[in-house]
Length: 287
Image 1 (cartoon, rainbow, N blue to C red):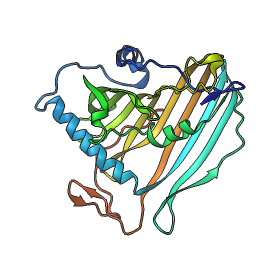
Image 2 (image 1 turned 90 degrees about the vertical axis):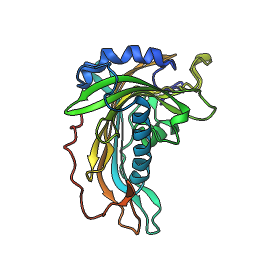
Image 3 (image 1 turned 30 degrees about the vertical axis):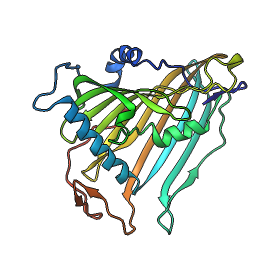
């Protein structure tokens, strides 16, 4: 997002993983997490966990590309407790007659945001980084630190801190914490932000484009894949020209497998499209 009337964007955030790690424990109780157990995993190595969830994430990424869903985005700025600007957009992610991915805007009232504006990077984040995926192909780009074990609602999870090893030009990354289900070995929650911020430190904030911390929760769909369903932002954005408090909510709903002649392969077997698979009860999204 960018600041108005001077072009800008969301919160400045250190690229140092250590700084993020120091911030996360203080906020854990606000996100409903149980006590963090720093002990090592039992019966499995940390490297094996990483390889397992990275392989599952690759399967998840391919599978989600074969689902339709509705994406509901709400962004607000606050002056004290008063909402002084709002952006809203509801989009159906569909397939056309040729089986190509398409987006259909179903609701998009005029934006009333005045102090910030939505940027191309914001919309890319909604599509690709808020529902963060860390696949086996992307593992080499990240430093991954095992933190411990933690209950997330009724789920047992392994917790990892994640940060890009280096920032390549014109590429953007996730930096933060992930929770991996200790049974399905899939990411069930993420907390962090997109990096790098853009234009930070430029004279008078020209082209300053900042990004907020967010939490994304997933739920199990069709008894197989943990898909993102709810993202929440409540952050103070520290622009050169002043701070902006923003609330953001992104909902991903109505997941349905595309009915074309496509196959979803899971653990080497085709998943029937018309038969929901039994699975555990997912944790509810946080309000």
